[in-house]
Image (cartoon, rainbow, N blue to C red; front, side, top):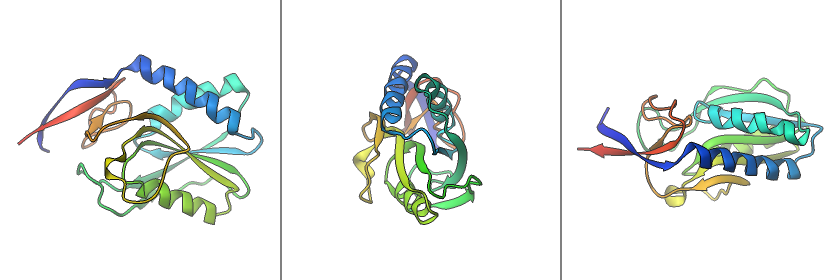
Length: 180
């Protein structure tokens, strides 16, 4: 692991809470409530997904929930360029409206390939919701349907995002500064 520090908070927990409520309002307005399946991409999305789900009750939206565990980073700080499925969903998505939730949209590879896969499996629609949108490294054409915050080209941790499986517990988003 490279020498680093995590001191600079980019997005505080109150801003995250406000934005999650706004995202849920938008998602609920665009979501048929009858056959919604929310799929979280683990591990990074777990905090964001939990907060989104807790807010759905305000709109009477009762989704089914499942998880995918994917890997495109390994233990590095940049995408390896391939998406590996480590744990697949078990929920039947045939004819369902799927909301795919991820922590960060970076290269676009993970969400684009996962959306394609879920549509091939029979999902009626697949929309995406990401906490962070980082356009600097986008390598495929993909835009999230719902995005929490646009961020600059920083490596970030907290609120479920990690560096080498550390810092997920932070209640905010912080910048990692590497020292060579």
